[in-house]
Image 1 (cartoon, rainbow, N blue to C red):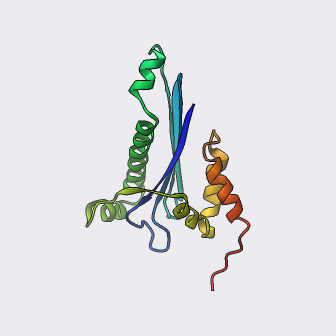
Image 2: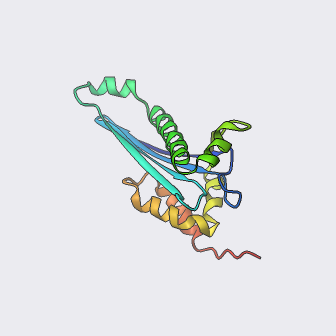
Length: 162
C-alpha cells in the first residue's frame, strides 16, 4: 500500500483578511485500485472549505499493468488539477467579480507545494481550526495522521491577538 499527502498554497489571496488558499491532498494506492481526496481552505467566509474525492478500481486490468500505468504521484497531480478546477468553478458560480479579478487580471493564480510548517500557520489562526477539524473527521484514511498529530499539539497553544 502506498499512501501520501501533499499540501499546496495558492499565489493569491481570495480574502485580504485571510491566509493564501490552501489545498491538502490525501491519496493512497494498492494493487486493486486507488483513492484520493482534496480539501480546499479558501479563506472565504462561504465556502470556507471545499472537499471532493475519487476512487479508481483496476477492474479487469492486470495488477502489474495497473502498478505501471498509474503512480501515486499521478494521482496527487490529478487531484490537484481537480481541486484547482473546483475552486475556480465555485468562484465563477458564486463570486463572478472575484473570479474575474483572480483569474483574468495580473499574474496567473497558481499553487505550489509547501511543507507542514507552512500549513501549521493556518491552524494558528482560529478562523481555520474548525475547517481542519472537519477535514480530519471526514478523511477516510490515516494518511493525514502525522499532520493531525501536529495539529493536536498546536491545539494546546493559547493564541491571543494583541
